[in-house]
Length: 306
Image (cartoon, rainbow, N blue to C red; front, side, top):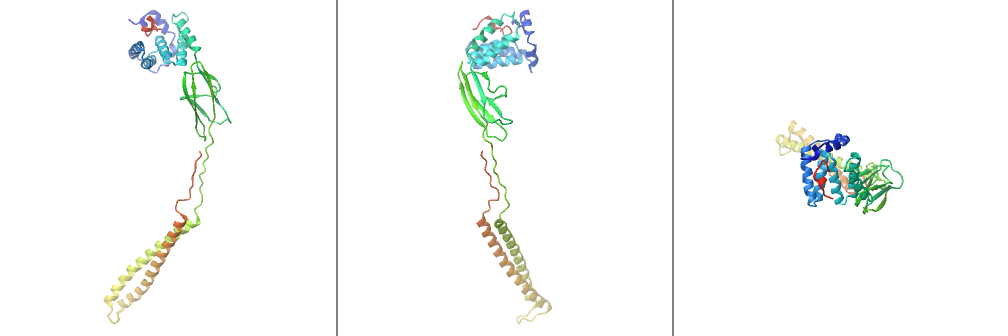
């Protein structure tokens, strides 16, 4: 039977109210199953499987034994800072009389001597709203310039700011080493978009083309009317040009419409031609130009005890 039900474990768990209160979900049954899966994986040395199991078990039902197993697991994955913090968390959550405290203290002290530290400094002129992120962890102003314990590995530093280009830098941190890196905000992003008035030639080309289109329209309509008058003349006049009143009026109207047709078509053709020439010469790209710069023992087997 799990030692969670013993008086000793009950006393131990009673000192964890803050962590339990912070848990968003409580599922002791699932936590126990995950813990056992984590222990099975750890006994096989499969730490990459074991650690997530222990972490989820701890989230679903916090227990000091789970934390100890998780800390041991993370140490095997060479996550020195993570394991160190977890052992310290165990020490802080248990009374000094608990038999697990000395072991957690010893393991934390051993890890502390191996801790890597990384200092990130933001240099250059201050930029309001600048943000520095270290592998998805945002560093506040208080964190910048301080030697912070980190796990060994490579870190990507990203600096952003309002109206600034993003800058990135990377730094590798070895176990027990003290590393530092200076970063700065990027150059200001300058928008040189220019909005100017339309060019006069460009406008003139469209005007000429518009007049030409109107002229062609007028000429075409007048031509249609002229043909209508012609049919009326043919119906009301003889071969020797003798016409009745209807034919005579149609003939006179036809002459006028003929002049309008010719003038409209000529003006339309000229307008369209001139407009097309001007637009072709000026170009029709529009007025906008844009550029942007821019050890395994009895205790390990019981989750609640260890």
